[in-house]
Image 1 (cartoon, rainbow, N blue to C red):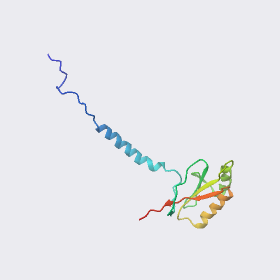
Image 2 (cartoon, one colour):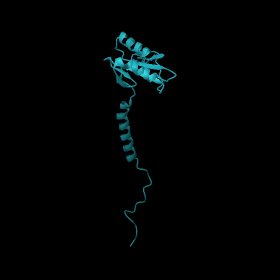
Image 3 (cartoon, rainbow, N blue to C red):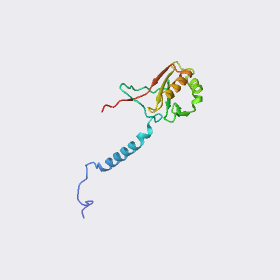
Image 4 (spheres, helix red, strand yellow):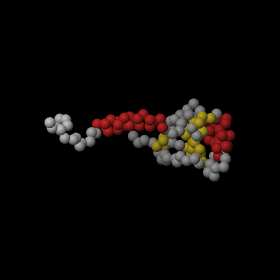
Length: 138
C-alpha cells in the first residue's frame, strides 16, 4: 500500500513557453492593427524635401492642414476657410509665440496654398513652417 501519487514521474521544473509565445503573438497582432490608427494629424500626401526636419508637437504650436479637396483643418478639426482667420485669432490670443505649421497636399495648386498662408498671417501667425516628408533615396 504505497502512497505514491501517480505515474511515478518527478515534478516538471521546466518552464512551458508555449502560452507565452501565444500571448506575444496576440500582442504583436494587436499592435500591428492599432498602430496605423494612432497616426496624429490629418492624412495629407506631403511633398518630399531633401532636408526635411521633424517639427515639435507642443501646446504652443498651431497646426493647419489642407487636403487635396481644399478642406482646411485647424489642429485636426475641419473648419470652413471663411472662419480660419477668426479661429486663428482666438487660438493665438494670449500666446507669446505665434508659430504655425502648415501641411498641404503635394498636388494642390500653388495659389491655394498661398491663399491659406495669407489667411494664417491675417489670423496672427508670426512664423509659418511648411511641413514636408524626408526625400527617400532610391
